[in-house]
Image 1: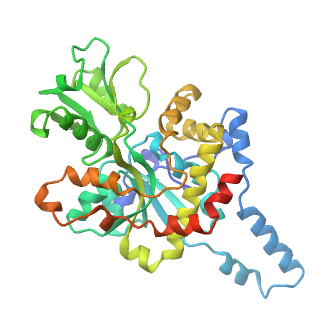
Image 2: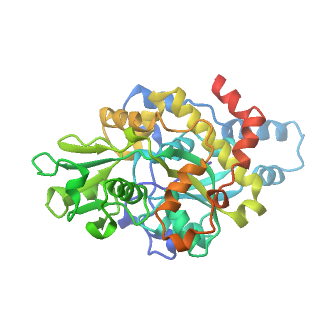
Image 3: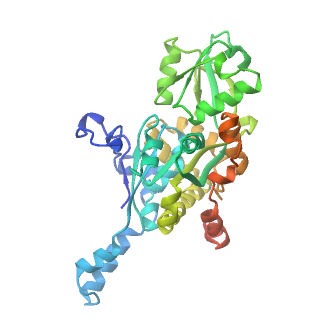
Length: 371
């Protein structure tokens, strides 16, 4: 059964032993959800319970050599999937875990959350098998010698807005010159998108100060305290002024993707394929059954239904049912890097769409869309 390690109280954790022990949290079962939507969530069909019953019946009728042998055959590969900032961008992996889709597709997945650069570092080092985070973080890691590759896109467009206080004198992006802006981790989606927006009006990185934060709520704490002049968020922020909605500009940007080391993909392709299957199925549930997706966002973001609904509506138009990684969404990232560092690099070097292509040509995705 897939395990979700979101939201564990850090004070109850044992002393950190490795990279993943930092900021790893555990979520509770979705049975604690408060509305009938959440109850429907639990009734989504999974495979594990039926598998166990089948094994028991076979053994009762003498059709298996021993219970231990059958359980050994049924044992699923155990892998870890790490993500960073707590935003609705993680909706597909949260939903895949909540609905038992990883388990359905033959994997025992531990979903873990960590802040800052930890998700990328953990993927690069092999401490985890899979990552789900902004494309720019993986590109920067690769420019420093890593071998990360994108196998499925969550979205190929920027889904972020820039916010200021209601009474702030800042009326346009151009007014941010000389100001301090709250962002996520270096090379995060918020950092990359903000750099793009500033560049469009002729403002360089040297013209502003970036203050990096571990979460979007922390950005707005800094904004409220006057430590920064603007903050970047993918979720609606009542009580603040939306300076610009970057999602409306349809800026190509790999804001989120499933990331894996190329060496792992080559040696464990069936495992990667099964994880991508679960991811694709979750994406299709998100598009077809908004109430289930919103219930999942309520659980993981710990927000009211109205807030989760608005967050869902921000991402719904750009979540990919057929999650190809588009070359232009990676090219945008390359264009922000030092020219000398990327002069011989094309987006295709970091993309492997073969798994999604196989799922599309086999009819797997079309069958999901018919449900």
